[in-house]
Image (cartoon, rainbow, N blue to C red; front, side):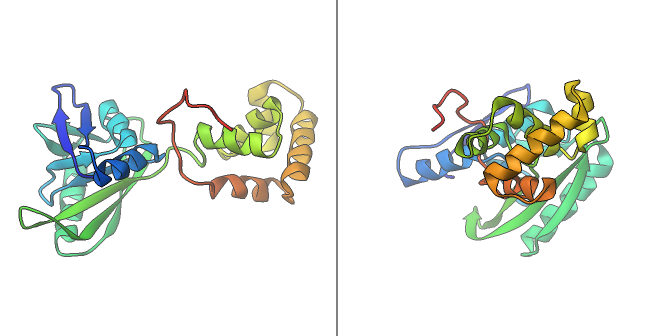
Length: 217
């Protein structure tokens, strides 16, 4: 993930990687469905992937000001600073930050062994995924197993933690229709119930929507 970071006054971070092997890693990181930020223990942003740039642009839990990573309030700033300080001593941790709507975003703060910038440890901040499965991988899964568009839609809602009755209410269909879709999907994927079906989706590779217009096969 070698590269440079440009930060605009709006807080949007752009990363540009030079040609060479490092560029390949940067491209891989941009495909991930969760955000990754590389920073110094003091919070200076060194590198971000696409999902992290999108998260930082929303400025709901984290933002960048003058190249420094910041939280949205003082209390969370202390949590972040303590986590970065622990990482500098080689300890990793998990912190929970909250958005303005009180949603929680988990961030793993991990020291990278052997990665040093100006004699300092590089710290990786890995954001939690926004959902059990990104829409791109859900589409891959549906096509791989021959699910219909309606079944894919039902599965997407179930993966958000909703029950069959709640899914039916969202789609404005009968509960029996949702359960019929579930039986069909279980038969096609060899799952023995909703939990197993959602479990198959939950462990799919964490590929995000970096290239929405690329063909799916």
